[in-house]
Length: 168
Image 1 (tube, helix red, strand yellow):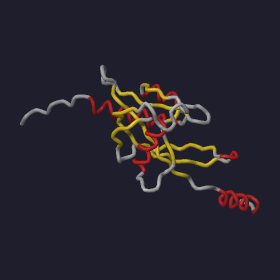
Image 2 (spheres, one colour):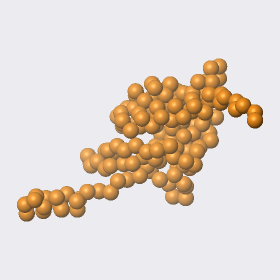
Image 3 (spheres, one colour):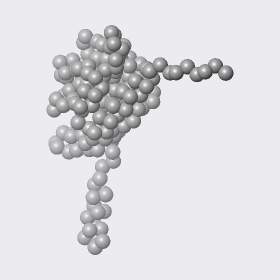
Image 4 (cartoon, one colour):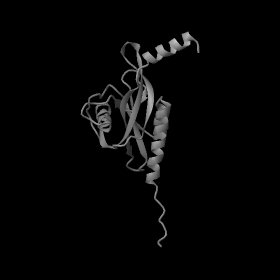
């Protein structure tokens, strides 16, 4: 590596920003008649693309509590949130003035039991309950697509009756 390449590499490292962490909610429920799982997708405020509720960590709240708060504010849903993340995805977040930062988003599942008629961002976003494959096809982030489909498979596996073991 020549001198100029080394200087260029060191300057890039100096200006590299640390990855920012966000919390997200994968909101799901079971259809009443068929018991099939479906999940909630919402549109982002700025671009209108399909996403899941997410936001920055909150003082005084754990990550899973922050994810539940985002689900409430952005989609008006409440339910039982898991304390365990099902994984994370990464994306590049555009900030004001055109700057972009790398974000790592920890995802927490929430089984939804309640939907409010009024909530903070009502009218700012569109909400739709869709199948997990449909949700995966709508979101842009490849890692989020994988998380959605993997979580659906885990849900379906837990719903299947387990074979009875032979009594010994």
